[in-house]
Image (tube, rainbow, N blue to C red):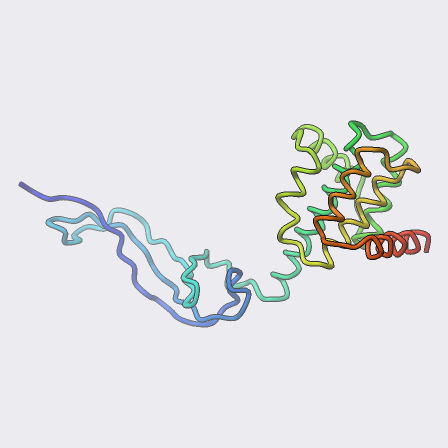
Length: 209
């Protein structure tokens, strides 16, 4: 009986240091060339696929595409911050939609509020796209927050509370459902009533500045 099979062979082509997104620090790496081979009696005899190059972290053993070598700590942090801002922005929209609808007159104030909070221009198109996405997904604000809130740090959690309060109060009053969600977020953050009131007072003063 002839035993024919396949196996992947890997060879180290280079070594160096890089910023590992998993470790969030500078680590050593190996540039590994992987390629599948046809085996005869468990001996590789013929290459049957193209070479795949991967960056392997010496510490956590994660594999990355070669483009990871272009990432540094600063750009990685900027990417993470941008992602959190997107999550907070979407949470703010879901808070506004918590009562089931968004008034037309809330759209432009919400856009301006987002520009001020995140200190960057937010277009009506971007706001419209996020509103449409949020409405079509049908995911309640409470459920969405359960997925994103745990990986926010304290400062990001506080910013989210302020953003959602300001966004949800654009009509002049929070409403029953928005108030319930905000209180639940306050409790989830472990804020005392005094700390919570202080956060709200800060963002109200900032919003009027």
